[in-house]
Image (cartoon, rainbow, N blue to C red):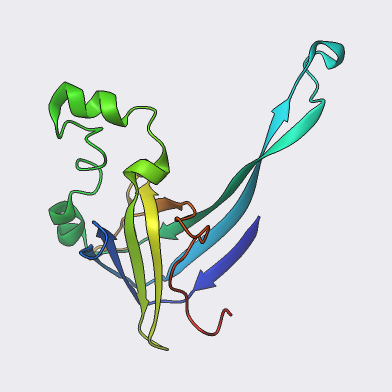
Length: 165
């Protein structure tokens, strides 16, 4: 797993492709953790030990913390997530449970201020929120993690800063 950290402040937007909603600014920056998935294959001859491994894909976890609580509540990230938490009723919940990230994914954009760069993933889904942590008496740290999967062009990010290339 490789780790890349974009120092803050960074503005984060998430939502429908072409029209993501502003979640606020992360003073602590954004952390990218890339990983390649491998699933074990077992057979009778090896018992519970893996006989081989099969490639299951590439993904990136995007960790953001310290964004604006009011904007996060307004965006309603988890309630609207694929209907899983009630939006759309029982039918919406049934459609979302077990659905692939490539089906439920929305655009995630991260805007660096200095230098002015943009990271854009067209297929991202929020992962269950972690517990809140008080940073000080005046600021609350809201950690959010997004899972980014490849788009139709097999790219995790359709737009990345030129200093990465």
